Length: 398
Image 1: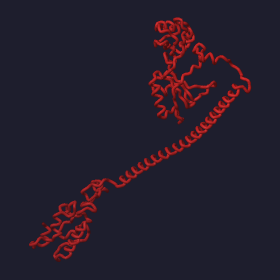
Image 2 (image 1 turned 90 degrees about the vertical axis):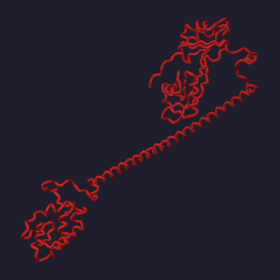
Image 3 (image 1 turned 180 degrees about the vertical axis):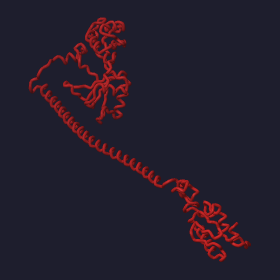
Image 4 (image 1 turned 45 degrees about the horizontal axis):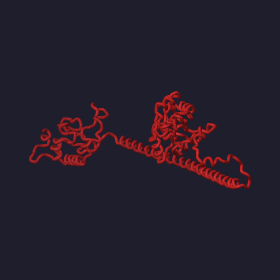
């Protein structure tokens, strides 16, 4: 916490000068006060009083003690500290609030000249303080804001209260020369200090006044005790409510964390499911993955000619299987002049006596990637063309 700045020409250095004659000038007042310090302002009202502002409080006190009672134009000058119109009294201050904290907190409302947390004779904080602003509008703003809203200084939830500071002159008090002379004053002072005799009029009514004072004292003590108990109960309720509030905040935080964890778990599960589906399928190929390209040279990845399993036109196509069975039945029922026998070995034809051996499953012109090619279908599925009476041997040589 930064130390408080030492300011000059503040409101605490302002002096009131009274009992002046109407012909007193500003120059005469400055010449009278100048030996005690610098003067920033000098205002003469023309009604028998004036105001001066000294540079420091110590210089103002020195000027007050030296000039008070001096004669000016045949009249004794009366010097007092002027009332600070921009000062506030602050109550319910926590014991941990220092002068510096109070100063910086109230600086939000305007320029602060002085801020003090009052302590007792043992140095214990009393919970009351004084804040003096440089300008009166700043003090009024702080007064309105703190009265209408809740203003806290520390973690303590007890709000501050403020009120205008009532000035009291506890240093000089009421001097004899300050009392105006009047007949009522002289009559009251006819009898001096004394103890009246018992059973006298003054004694009886004096006793009644003392009973009233005692009743007032007891009422105040009872009220203070009642208010102290109410404060204690409110503090206990506040502690319990604060613990419940913290527990509720923890529950809400845990719920948010649980929801976030569930969301992350769902995202992880979806990523795992998408990864378990395998490689991406390609449209236009029956919705199946064709796998990687086959290895060249008859390696393990070599795929046989023809369509993949499950695709139209492949070896599992029911139309192709039915056509092959019809073709085999046709060869079995053919004329006895046929020179070769078709063996039901799938993918191979055994060569006849006059045919060269056939290697592989089928000649390339007759077998395509999508199953038997057009030439194969022309020659074997539909049988010999109509009107062709050549022997089967010549038809095969074609």
